[in-house]
Picture (cartoon, rainbow, N blue to C red):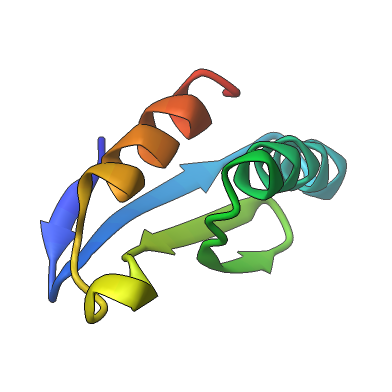
Length: 76
């Protein structure tokens, strides 16, 4: 579940292993590129953490972030 905190949408994803986590990141990267809206994220082994905010709007959460979050949820 996405949480809104500190003017960002945040969610942690956990997978069976690094390969599954990396495959998920690849799918997210393709969707983010289509939207020209790129996340701040980290990956350690099987865990991916994502923070979304819109830099052009002053680093706050906008509809663009909510739309990308919804697309990301569809990639799990």
